[in-house]
Length: 197
Image (cartoon, rainbow, N blue to C red; front, side, top):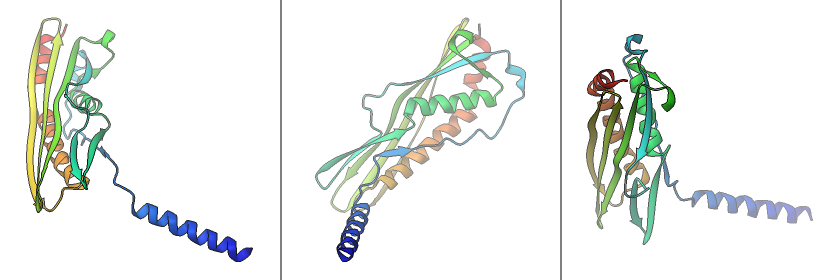
């Protein structure tokens, strides 16, 4: 009986080890924005801003590719609208604005995510990944509106087939470029000051 229990345990351990080794990679890619590197004094604290992200893309995934005759769709965590809402909130907070609820805000800032996708083209021996992020930032105040378009693109090529890691690397580079452009931009902050109620 004891030998039987040991044999069962060994078979179960080997099976779980094999299943772990054969596990497919996660279809969710996680993104973490860098924090703003500069901060402005609190001179804009009188202006309270509500920031809202909207996913305006035509498809929910951030990439898709075919491997072994199976379609793999990748998604983002957090969602792309929540991700860029967080980035713009961090940016405006670092520039001295107070972030508040819609009912307590002087101005609304809507971040429309128009594109956040990595297109994967694969052949027998090569692959090409073209990533693009396109944002439309709308400032809506009592004295007027303003729209700013920001984004970035990157392309990379490699041998054989693309993996989640390569797709994540290219999307990370495009994401970092876009976040850097948001943090460097002064037009949105100037529009908030100009059009605030």
